[in-house]
Image (cartoon, rainbow, N blue to C red; front, side, top):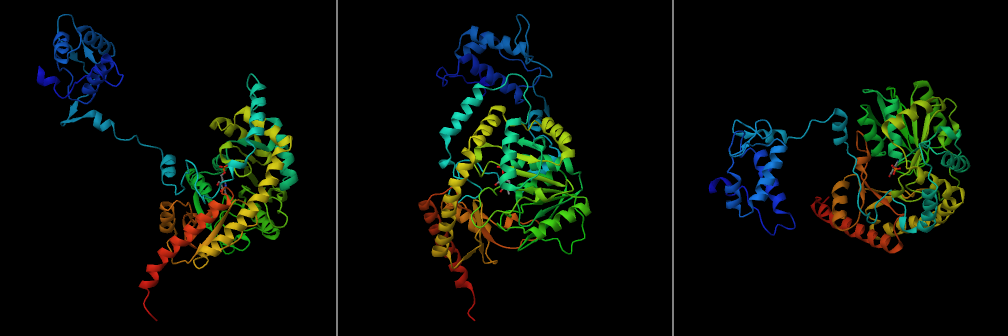
Length: 491
Ligand SMILES: Cc1ncc(COP(=O)(O)O)c(C=O)c1O
């Protein structure tokens, strides 16, 4: 009998705080599941097991009774326990069925498309010069905590409206005044992020096989959401005025644009192009997503009003986020949906459960109403403008020979263009190893890659961090360019 247990069951008295009973139960069960003891296999008697393992017979009997109750063992008085049929694993062609069951479950086409999405999720503390980040360190957390505490104490009991009237009203006032939107409060849907807004719009508007246009280069999150919805996503090139569809013959069902601060180039779509876009959407019967992700933060001149405010035909979904104007982990975004789609959109919101916690909505409403939001934006705009200027200057000093910057009029990030022969993914990987986050530009293109560059954030980093990171970029670009120059044949 000794050989049967040898190497299979081995309990330890000092088993890292795990009781002998638990160890024995786990090991007997695992041995049956692995197929080492097939159905019909007879175990040693409880007395023999106890003797071999050096544990009390009570412990063994307790475990055998438990396994019998769960259907792993058949027990009868005076007989050795037998591995039950069906409960334990059978061997097929010498292999345990458990091996086959361990193969991953087949996933849906939707999940498959998500798996293939070329859109990196970022987790963990950001490092200089990660784009898309506001400076969470400078957020007035004490004031925010007071708002949260009050909202938590006053939380309604019962089922509250999922889009709180107080936040809808506060947001509307802010967006009408600062972004020129035209809407009624009930058109505002409060969601956990812009990304969730884009995802819901894609599902509400698109059917599998529909054509969707995205800016190229553009925001990968929108491309991923539309592809997941089954759309055929096509990249549309940009000119100095943003999205430029001249000469195209295809007709989209959905168009995604960032007209007030093109992501990632930072370009501004002028009023004439905005009007053309609305006319085109109306003729093509297309919906438009206007992603106004960072337009609160504006440095030079006056910010241009939102496309949504010009829309007479009810084609524009306006989406925005608190990620850049407060801090990313606040996880709150919103959509203004065309009036006639509010009902279906709210159904989709409830159906998918994309509901912002009610106390956080109330706290945000108070934060806006009491003027803290506007004050924070004013303060951070001054700070971010100085950081933008510093990054541009530091890049010129340390890496001016290798890249060209297109200074953005607002927002939290910029693009530094590289020589088109460079490999921005390789450069980004080298910089990551040197402690600097610089996202490559090329993955932002959909279809043909139209440039190489580095996508850099300046808002979340202080002067020293910006200077040090720019010096690292200069050094790495110098090192990577040097061998290439040596290889180039002499003229
Ligand atoms: C263009 C654009 N839209 C939306 C988002 C995401 O915003 P949220 O954090 O609300 O999903 C980002 C984030 O970086 C962005 O760059």
